[in-house]
Amino acid sequence: AKPELIVCSPLTRAIQTSCLIFEDLLSKRDAKLVIRPEVREVHNDVFENSGRPLAQLRSCRCLQTLSCWDVVEAALSEDATSNWSEDWDSRWAQGSPQNKDA
Image 1 (tube, rainbow, N blue to C red):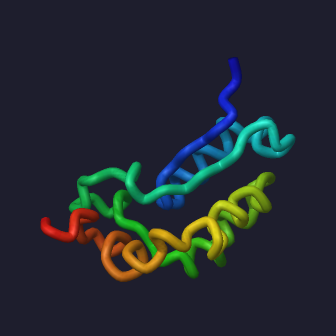
Image 2 (image 1 turned 45 degrees about the vertical axis):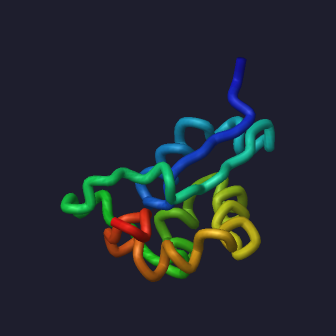
């Protein structure tokens, strides 16, 4: 069976990988892309595991050149990210823990 839902973190390389692996399904709208910060790597001391604010992701040329950019753009839209964008931009993208008590 083919997946109907693709979930990845808001790290550029994770979005790229998801789009490359599932390009056909995403382009044909046979699967939905959801981007969630909870699935990002937790080793913040590694540069590749740090994030970027959503505005930078939305304007990223590397992402905009993906064949399914319209799907990525929708998954990064204000509507799609409204319940986590503030924490992502202010803390998580810079490597702060997602748990506010940590």
